[in-house]
Image (cartoon, rainbow, N blue to C red; front, top):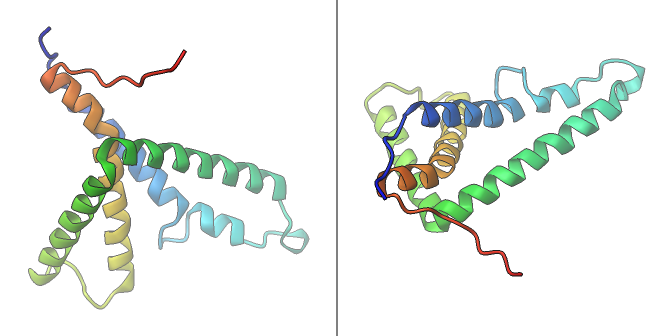
Length: 143
């Protein structure tokens, strides 16, 4: 069986999904789920409680599923390797003067970008390996 040609649109879609997932939970701009639940709104801070609770459980569930899949594919050593690689990359950009070392938001965005890289790699790895080698990853289900 020959491996199919790999289309990079799938990686871009996974990158955009990871960006949305990580930066919608919290980002320094003030437009995130974290800022929304801490916005008092009205009624003594209990405005839209059930909607916020539903969205929180949904976001937590999606994060749990994604991270479980990422760790299953990359294994802990792969996650640590990508963290080190991203960290070295961001320190290199700071040494080159492309990142502001004094701004804490810069380092927060760098850490969040590291999470995006790890999620994108984890979500893409199984399909990349299947399309490059033709090997399928299946899970055995006991009968």
